[in-house]
Image (cartoon, rainbow, N blue to C red; front, side, top):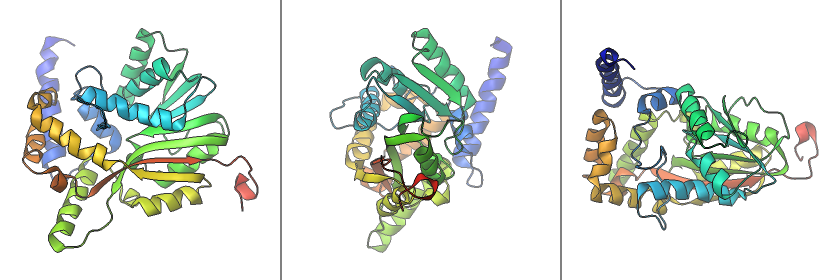
Length: 308
């Protein structure tokens, strides 16, 4: 980019952050959020944008990779699989799976064009473009043939989909009988007792949902999540809360390594630093974090291929 255009781009970016984070009357859709975030990832060695799985991890890169591996291993990715990864970000998890779990073919869908372009270049530079096919497309209107993939996965993005319920139906459609769906996802916590705790819980959820493009129709807890998977036709449903291995250890790591925040855009550092002044139990009181898995049954009967 010519040097003369850099100040203009930086000013436009700063105004975008200012409007997004500090204007209570303005929000962005998911593509707008990730276009603005761009490559300002707090990770040091990759471009992950997930919160990480911290059971054994000691830094953000390791935790981000561990979350991707948790999803891949729960899905049972293997060399015979055709995998559909919805919301692949900059392709970090697909590259990781290709190099470790080695599924036969990975198809990625992502609505954010800037992420798709860079992820494709990264995949090509590693010589993985025969194994990984990254496409711009919607997870709620998949340009994928019915009964054509073995696994559908989504790492920390299904809460954006409008709606998650539509995505679940699409996932069921494209999966082969016996295929598995696995999601790392964010949902609200069940309501707690006590006025102050409930207000804190509501504020926690609304701040995240409002700024990170979570539509109201996706704001339901684990029992409803289970019911919506069942209504979509899935069985062998398991929804496990892993929030204790996500929010609190991430909060602790950032508090102990404030230099990590320097990799964020300057406009994003202030709210991050303010959040770190509070206890993790308060900041994340309204947020659950789930690992959800389900299977499309092999025996399909009745209208639409679903069991009656």
